[in-house]
Image (cartoon, rainbow, N blue to C red):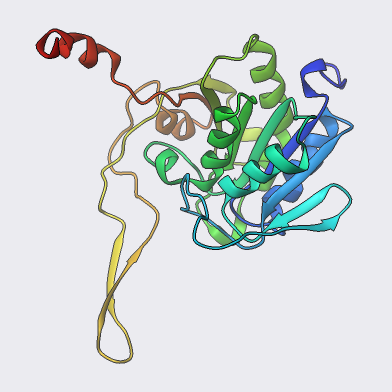
Length: 261
């Protein structure tokens, strides 16, 4: 596609959960500027990985300017998008919110824990189109950012072009595989996969002899179901998952409705 500003991308708000100084948000801001001349950044002051869709309600939070159209918030990713939409850009909302690029995949059950996805969720609740973006890796010391850099803009363009009009109560969750750009085998429209939970606990003893538990990343065991985000990344494809915020199990509700009438 041509390197032109898409009319839906007149203004972009960028956020994340890794913090205002994270390499992923610097990459995403660079990508956003390829898509729009009006880019704003509102991100947490510190890393908020695993914060989920949480709000800071027990203390005040502050919106601090750190550069032209760049702000940090001493709170969660949800706080950042809330302040960005309802205060900073009130009356001139962005046409798209981008969250990421997260250092590490946000697939399967990660979606429910992810602060990266939570920022996109918050925008979706306010009716603003949103995309969460994450870069899978095998070694944290050598995250393959080149993969996200190579395919990020094209993935965003494809989603924006295909999702017209933007589906209600839905954001898109994009994950880039942990490979070099020349090993990527294209894009895949996927659904949320499922891993075995509870296998990510490390147990140890502190210097005072007290036991502790440390929650780490979930591990993939066995194969992944075809069509899932897990399978797409295993196949070295960019996974694109539409995530719907209405959590109602509609078929169950309809089946049981007569029992409660």
